[in-house]
Length: 164
Length: 190
Image (cartoon, rainbow over all chains, first blue to last red; front, side, top):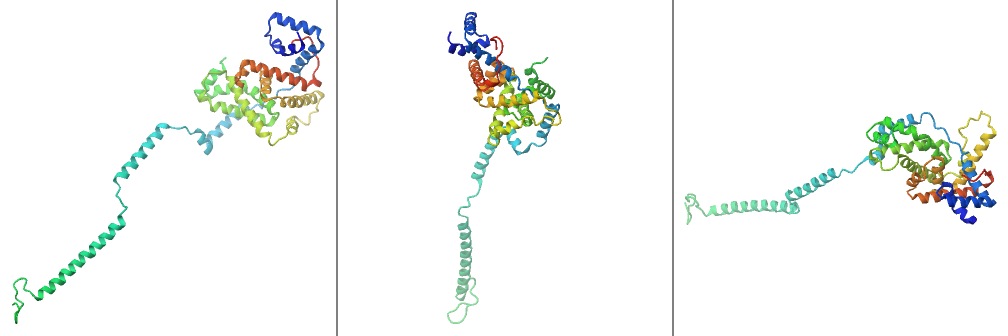
């Protein structure tokens, strides 16, 4: 076995994933190769070196702090939390959309057409003027005709060629 | 003893005591994982709180499809990565390494052993920082958190073979980086 192969199969060797024959081959190579033996030793030394990175001790009140945080979050939900907690309610959304559509259709169908309202009011005013004018003409005509009466009995006409 | 999954299912049903038990089992591991990731002691506890808050809030959607620890460390990894990426824009590596020991009592006489360990923490952290993200995470989960290759594969969402390769490659790179600090050990086994 060559040194390059040893380094490539070192992980399987480390994990014990090799067959007895392969393992024996590697160990035989290691016995006779100073470089590979040094490599294996360094690799083992690395794992021991990493253990010098100590653990840190958490504060004693980690769990009570956690529940305090949970309570604080519940007490002040805030707008952002409200948005985060907002869950889409498709049934409600569908119902609202239906109501909206029905409202538009209903009010659209029964609301008065006000597009010509200005002209309508103008027409009404004109009509009133015409009626008044008509009445005035009728009265005037009647007055004029009354000179030549009689219209009902002719008692007022007299003199030459007049009615009595 | 109840399994983590059983406790999580009880949490899902509204049993906060079950979640306290879960935290009791895992908060030290999560805290140290985040600490080794960020090398910032004072923020590690806040970030660990954030991890458990996320787990707690997701309890209603929990499905026991994967092992609880893989889910937990996946969240811890995301929280740590987000924090480091955000923080790295504002803080230098020197500031991060200087931060170590802030919580140590300055009145206590510092022994050679403490100085050595402090130095080694800085050296190891700096070497780890040079590794690609996945190699670093794989080594931290396997070496420090004791996760199996299968569990680490779940966290990293890759195959077991890929995890083995990450650990192996990372290890070889660390050997190169930390060669001056390595002492030769006895016969072969690693």
